Image 1 (cartoon, helix red, strand yellow):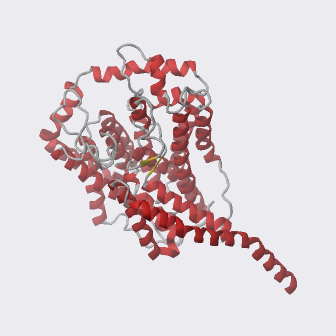
Image 2 (cartoon, rainbow, N blue to C red; image 1 turned 180 degrees about the vertical axis):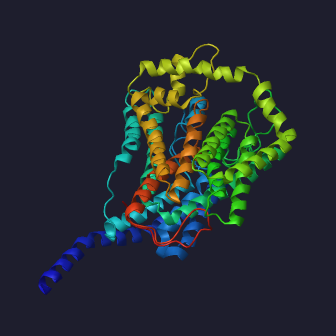
Image 3 (cartoon, rainbow, N blue to C red; image 1 turned 30 degrees about the vertical axis):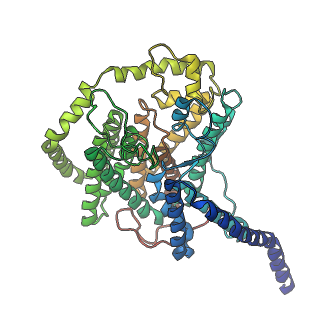
Length: 523
């Protein structure tokens, strides 16, 4: 038996030595690569230098948490989501293509890297090492939840062969693949201990975006912070007839409409945590304050679709609380209504002007785009005209007097570019996430039901906004959506595990984040 055990141990060591050799080779190659990067570092533009310095600083700081490195990176990823629109693009800036088509491609996908992408790459590197070098965790398995995300990537690939600009379709495919990879990692690694940190990250995002939005509205500065990526044209913004004098908040997103739906997606969580039974009184005040800030920011976006989306999603949240018998929401709701009434002399004229005095043709012109998008889809029904090729399609399909812009409807834009295949895959991802959240909601297990309701409301707001808005793939908005899709999978998994493995200690998003343990293996 001793001999057999020794032989087994020797066999395991023999199986590991190629991966250990690979680790040594990568370590040796890292020196020249670092030297090369450092040599060219100072020739970069200032915004690229800032991103690299921040990434290196985060990496250095993370060494303090080496035993919990994966957890640290995952939490850092959550806190970095508001910076997803600050990207470094590749193969795009120097590309000699129609400028208006290139501008629209920023909302259908280009090859670019942001801080969340860098952190995701580090997480995958750690996961790879745990699987193939340390043999600490098994290979991840595909689940039924992965079907529609994978089909969405396949739909992008199938749209490429017939597209007039295959390069644009390739860019859109890479963009989609980046977000599916984020979903794949997070859906397998988010655990209960991460939920307080996710809540904290959303709270910090609301605080930062709201304060920045108020600053932009009051001063008219930094209105194009993300679009210009910190260089030139920081204070410029296109004019909306009827509210020409208003400076619309954009935060760290590309556009005021993207800013509005981003805050509308974040707002349900602080509302829910304000009324969660386990929330301490001082934290209840904090979450309530953050919710009010989110509401102010949504108003300052001057996006009608964001206003409607936020109103509908928050109404659903309120109704769910009443249906659960949590009457504690009634009194604060009445107080909030009185608060809104007291402030109405300030904001009511703004809302009235935006809804009733803005040129109505701005709204009806969006509906004129729908038949054009249908014509494109009808002629390329199964696989679409090509991801990222919508503006090129307008050269052949647009009608006189119709806006020369992407169609203001997510379903028609996806269908026109990726066909029926892409439409089924995209909405399969969205409605699959809503269904998973609903399954968790029905079980009423804390804290999962609270986060499931917040995720459900956020995705509902996203889908409603997409009925009349083309910015559903703006980097910050789209990255947050895929995080929420991954969270829906993780919440369902954790909720099902709670039936057989009782939690050892309460860990809700309602209390201050607690120290994290080492990350578990992939699932």
